[in-house]
Image 1 (cartoon, one colour):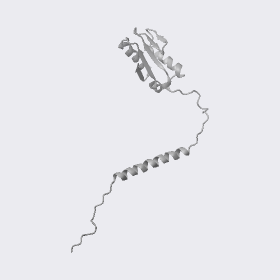
Image 2: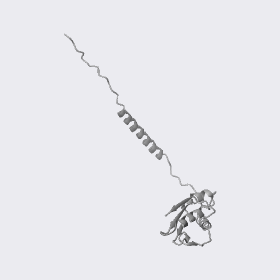
Image 3: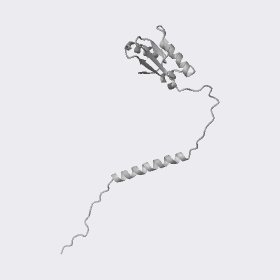
Image 4: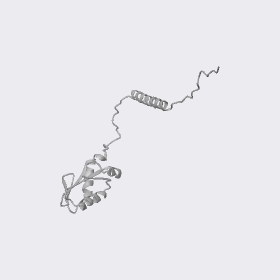
Length: 146
C-alpha cells in the first residue's frame, strides 16, 4: 500500500503591493500628525513696529501705471494726463511712479512694476511699440497690452 504525503508543499508568495500601500498610509499618517503637533506648539504674538524704519516700504507691484493711446496716437497716463507731442512718456511715467511710490524707486523696484498699454481699437501698432520703447528707457520691466 502506498501512502501519499499528507501535505503538499505549496510555494508561498509575498504580495508586495499591499505592503507598499500600508507603508505609504503610515507615512502620510505620521506626516499629518507631526504637522498638527507643530501648530499646537506655536504662540501668536503681535510685535510692536520697529523704530528703525523711517519710511513705509511699498510694494512696487502696487503702483498703477496705465498708458492709453487713442486712434490719433495721443497718449494719456493713468486716464488723465495727456502727453504732449514732443514730451517723453518716460518722464511722465517716472514722475507718476515717484508720486505713487513716495520716493525715487530703485532699478529693482522699476523692474517689478508693470505698465498697462491700452490702445484704441483703431490705433496703429506703431504708436503702441513707440510707447513701450519710450517706457523702457526708465527701466520698467513689465508691460501688458490690453
